[in-house]
Length: 315
Image 1 (cartoon, rainbow, N blue to C red):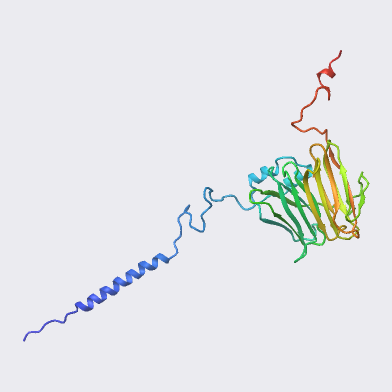
Image 2: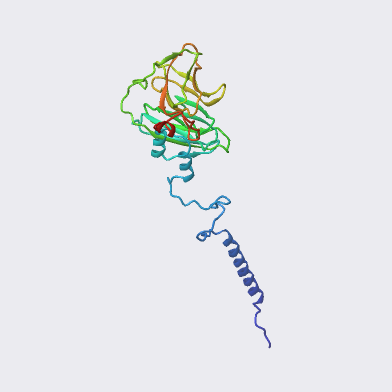
């Protein structure tokens, strides 16, 4: 009697098929496994902008381009001191930067802004608590390198935050610096002034012309505790506005307007306009801050206009 062994070939083929399928699934799943990128290889999340390398500067390092803009052009000695103490920040067009002072010990801050020679157009605000803006200003400067912006903001009863929004286009960046200023005494900012302060009624204006040798002007605006609304303009020639500040302060005594305006060249006139109604007068102090010889570095020196070989020679 003949017999045959059982055939296991179909079961063997089935097991082979299952093993092949498991290998295929393992290979497909490996495509979704996280892979550590090699050193120096950029992924889509870590890629830098085209034409720019990976940023290697440590946090808080100063940008050399920003430092160059901050120290270019004309700078008042007070502005230069602020640039040295602060870390200048580049504010691109359409962007916003804030400086927060959480301690109430900071009662005064100094703000400086400038550009590399392009127009400066920005909004400066002081925030104190949620939805409370007791101080706001609109600033426009025709040439931010020749006439940098420099003002002092009183910040009583902290914490306070200073915000600067560059309202110009992307092609007009600005450099800003904000530092805490020392408060040695609480005297009035008009104390010790050489010029007599004048009262400007609501809706009125007053002009202050200056000689060519005046290089900068100090401006102080105050009230008796009422809100302060004013427009400060620097003109050089007929209807030639070089700098404009539109100011609002909810309390002109606690937060007066203190600023220094650079006035290079000749024919400079400061115009103060009280944009409030007649019930809100303000007191204005406008006086010369720095006085030079009235000559610029590119101005010609005429013969006989000063000491020279013709005057020093003995005849």
